[in-house]
Length: 493
Image (cartoon, rainbow, N blue to C red; front, side, top):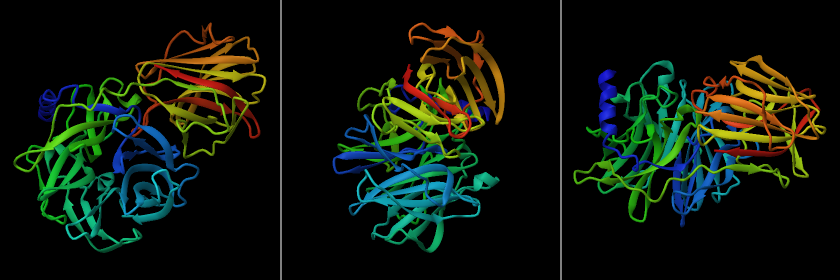
């Protein structure tokens, strides 16, 4: 392992900090991209956050806007969590999303949804591949004769086995696989460690090229990197590049992988995810692009170059105008969180226990989140929170003239601090976070002069789940029929 780490470090020195370009700040794992007309469209993993699978658009591959979600209102009936690895494709006037999710009372399966236009609405066609140990990371590809195939990973690393990449013919209606599946390749090279996954393909010249990821995708101890394989026939034999991995840590980014190749103005780019080496798991796997080219000997190499400057982290200012909630807000698939809006207020209906919560992605490790609470209109405890998932949160609640800081760790709730405060009809809570994991809560009667709720910072290092990042958000805690009322939420970096 020491030699492997040293090898990676030496390779990383060859990639400048200006090679890997940030285009999707925040938690956007497994990004996929396709060009439709003169516009690029993308999606990414949402895991256990909902709505599932954002649909984003861009004219330049750099500046992206969220337009909708594949599943904006309710989950597909067959699935319950782990909404992973969407692959967005376009063919014959129709958009197809191939995605992975956990089947109710089952394992990971691959499903398909479609729409007549990228903005949706999308129709779900249910699961199409469900192997015993799980099936993920689907990618459609046609052979030289136009025959349609599905490529995917058998998730055997979940039971300590090798991970074959399979191919099988897919009917034109995208409703069933036909014929027999065939293995293309599996994890055999030392750098690939316990898996290969996230295969995407393109055809260029005499070859089909498979971009794939290997080793550990997620968490602070990640070892992810990207490789390439090629074949003159889609069914193989497939040859892995002897210079793999070709996508490696560099500059500010570590553990790169799982993406899609795309062409722009006659040049080739790869959109993928990686962790910021400083904020790491707290900001999650962010969306990057890097240029690549084909070598004289028929392989690919990533090259220095940029389309433009990195996309900067933008502040959030939500005054809850209108009747619909911003698409930047996310909730957990494990709660039936409900709300209403009106008069410049968000009324978040309470749940008992840890409370009903919703959050926004964090784009940097140092940030300040502030909310204004309608004290007299709130019948539930109103909270400002750093959210890992439904079992890991740190929240400051305002209720009946008292601010209480509660920690939920592995589902166990503990009171950390309690402070009586002199509230008005509107009272502010603020959360100051440093390095992604050091938290201080403050309160104010006027939104300008803030006082600390506690003296010692709270260590929130435990919050991020293995495959997700922290959110800053709002919580409503109480019995059924009560609600917390918020009239604004700000997030600054």
